[in-house]
Image (cartoon, rainbow, N blue to C red; front, top):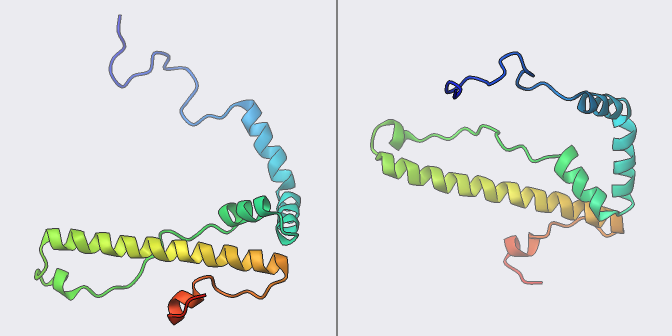
Length: 134
């Protein structure tokens, strides 16, 4: 006999989202030591360990992705822009936001690398913004 669509073969089995005992134990052990682990990671990053810098940047200081911005789009609100035009505009805005996020990550990583090597922190793209070449 086949099961009904959308119904479990074992309705009294493990509920969705329930964690293994081993997973719960690992999370409790990690939670007890999270401050010391983070402090060691920061110490390694400050000493110039590139893996620690990457973990620090990816995990402890992630880029804010869903930050609302205020934009006045009178043409869209007034109906002067078609749905297709609005979709194309949304693509342009999405590309721009993605470029800003990438640039922000690049600048933060360069700053950390420069600080760990003792060099002054200068933006990577400063020459490109000034119109000069390095």
